[in-house]
Image 1 (cartoon, rainbow, N blue to C red):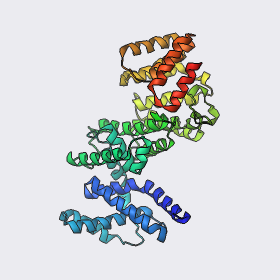
Image 2: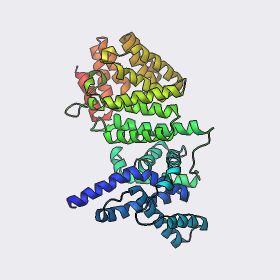
Image 3: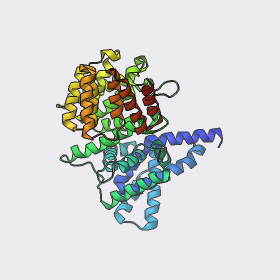
Image 4: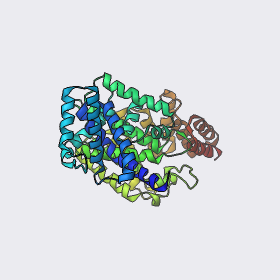
Length: 418
């Protein structure tokens, strides 16, 4: 592939990342069939890869892709003699839009936000497993290829492809409507959407397996999805809370990795390397979330905890008592043992390692976090602070044995060596 051709292909792929979600969303609304909509969008992408290197990227690439997909859809409908209603709808739109130099901005602006919001709720529908929701969301809203999703989650490409196919089949068989949920159903359904976006971000921010501490591309995809959601649902406190949480975490990303790719823990980070733009964006999103709802929801509470770290000029200056209070509220909302473990860390910083260790030991005795690498890691840290070196070493070795991430294992083994 020549340099010019490769550059053209990269440009097409960049446009696809931006436009694909809107294209699939608009086609899904018109066709009422997510699978057919994605197929037509892919055909439009193939056409762009063929034509744009020759003709140049059009002034309005999104409109070009939409028009091409519509015409391809019309051809298929004619060949297959599909329902007259769908045929007439596509035919009318195609006839009203010139095939050359298309300008569909006016026609698409009105429903575009609604279409995207519908697509978000369909891709994250509770009828799908969390793994299927994640793969489908990255495919439809993130514009990632099956191969890219597989690489991101270190899975076989065939596995991801099957997961996506099954997800679309499940949505079709369940007759999931292409619509925003009714007001009464919205909170529960929104929770599923936010869970998927945060799962994507977390896998990028602290990879569960592999050789890399972080997978920045997944963080960027999740942030982009979060910003889309904030634009589509400007009055939802938890949408802004999640966006704030991700922006604040991402502001620390450069400081989390050392020169050789090694993990750098929060207390050891050079705060001068934190991204001030992302930090300010996160604090602004948090202020928006706090202004929209009281009491605070779980994502907003987590963002408020992250903001305590962001506002501290040094690790020693962190307002740990406030963080404990925020974790108290979060535990009462979620009942999550992972949150309880994080609260134990905050208690140890605010009131002493012995108090934190007592909480961690209670958690260990409950069995709720059996097999979770961070439980012995936290325990090792607290034992070390109390001067119980041998017990700390054994705890760090246990943590190293439980993690599948190479960089995290290196941190644990380094701590075990003292």
